[in-house]
Length: 386
Image 1 (cartoon, rainbow, N blue to C red):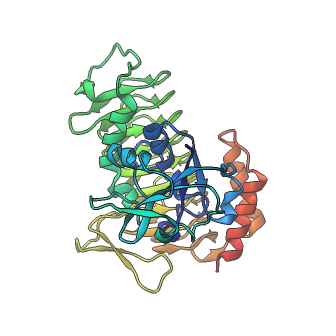
Image 2: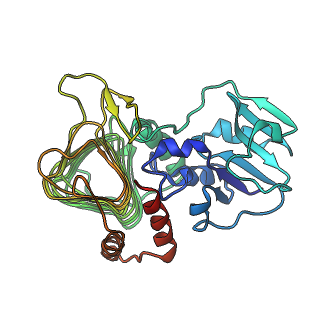
C-alpha cells in the first residue's frame, strides 16, 4: 500500500529548511525522513505538502494508502504498528494524526487530515520522536546517525580496506563502494562512522564518530570532524566541524569553525567563515526568526542557514543566527542574528533576477541546472518576503 508523508502547519516552525522542500526531505542522521520511511517499510513514499511545492513531487496515488505525519521520525516499532492499521483507522497522539489508512475517496490536503476523518482512532501513549524546530536537526543527529547506521549496514559487506593505521574501533566503520581514503585518523569508539559511495577523504583528516558522509562528498586535507556530524551528498568540507548537518550540495571547503549548526542545500561558506555556538555568559541561546518573540534553543546553537545562501570570506556569525534562503551575506563585523530570505549584504534586498543568475551559476559548478520549477518556487517566496 503506498505511503503518503503529509506536511502539517508544523512546517512553518521548521523554516528556513522547509521553504523549498517538504518536511520529508529534511536530512537528519544519515538519511532524510523520507529515505528512512522507505527503508523501514520497503514501500514507495509520496509527498503531500504546500501547493507551491507540490508540483516538484510525484502525483499522489489513488485508492487506499497510508497517510503518515512527515514530522514523525520513523522507528521499527512505530512502523510495524502503522503497517498493521486497517482501513479508516488512525494512530493519534495529543489530538494529532500520526498515521492513518485512507480509502482514497477524499482529496486530502494539509488541513484535512484530522482524527474526525477516521472511523477508529488508536491512542499512541509511548514517547514519539518528532522534528518540531530547526535546531532539533542537530540535536537529534547523534541518535539518528547511530540508528541509521544500524539500519543501512545490517547484514552487508563493506568495501575492503588494506590500511587501517590510525583507526580506532574499525568494526564501527562502514565504507561504501568507490570511497577513496588517504592516510587519516578515524576514531569510531564513541560512535559509528559511515562513508558513503564515492566519498573522498584526503590526507590528514581527523574524524571522531558518530559521523556520516553522503555520496560523492569530499573532506579536504586536514579537516577536523567531531560528532555528531553529517556531511550530505556532494558536499565539500574543510576546517573544523562539530555536531553539524550539511544537507547536500553545499561547501564549507576552507578553515573556519562550524558547530551545532545546520546548512541547507546549495550553500557556500567563504574561507574563514565561523560561527559561535555558545554565548559568552554561558546562558541559554535564543533565536529570532523574524517573530516578535525569540525562542529558547538550549545552551548551544550556531548557524541555521537556508538553501542557496552564501557567506563572504571571513564572515562571523554570532550564536543562534538564523539566515534565510537565497541570501548573499557580506559586510563588516558580525552578521545580524536574523537575515530574511533574499538578503543582500546585511540589510539590503537581493534583486530577484540577480539572485536567480547567481544560484544558477553555483548549481552549474556541480553539474546541475536551475529548473523552471525551482524558479517558480523562488519567485513565490520572493513575493512573500518583506
